[in-house]
Length: 133
Length: 133
DNA sequence: CCCTCTGTATTAGCTAACTAGTACAATAAT
DNA sequence: ATTATTGTACTAGTTAGCTAATACAGAGGG
Image (tube, rainbow over all chains, first blue to last red; front, side):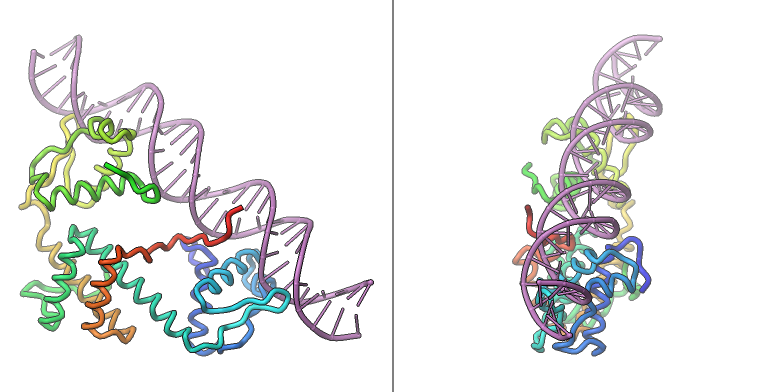
């Protein structure tokens, strides 16, 4: 596992595990590698992995039993939880980017309504549809 | 001016000034209060205001002349078209990302209304949920 | 019990971000 | 030139967040 130096390791670990759950490499009920094992694998302190597992538990994605291990939760709620999380992130960044352009949330909503009503036409202005930032 | 203790002061100052520009309290070409004056008003260090002004300049919202002051940029000099393009890009990418999560435009709008009504607090990325001592 | 697996708590050190104190530098009016 | 205004540079101290080193604690098999 290679790390982006600007992003906290425990967050990257979380993302990796989420990705494995979504892709099916980690199935509901399955045990995650122990904090020490995974820590050894990626050459990092066990506490950093523990932190990632704790946050994942807090997010409702895994559960932990002391002395036994950490496991992916059984419920199919998990995809829902993950989806909601991403949706929230998209919403947050949308309003944040709009705000950075001097557009108030109210205006942003109005623009979004127009945009969606017009089927995404860009009112004559050439649009660069690449993902910003 | 009251400050949210969890948000850097210079960011709150920036937001306040943007709001004043949008509302017309600060007009194009008009001079902003000096760093010392505003610092005195809100009981904060001049450098903190300077930081806010620098970031606003970097964002193309104001310009600064040393020894003279900081001013709101004239409308003609503000890259309005570029701003429009960016707004369109943000809108487009918003709906595209939502679609990739299986969220229809209609649902996206509804979620956005909700999100903005609730203040969008779930954007907190810096989370430390560990128990304090 | 003893050993070894699991997660957890405690503590410390490092770094980046923010803010303040102070001194410097440019502009313009006198 | 002097003076009063403006923004800026430099330095230091505080804080929050991340990671590591180490020791503690629960579960289960010999």
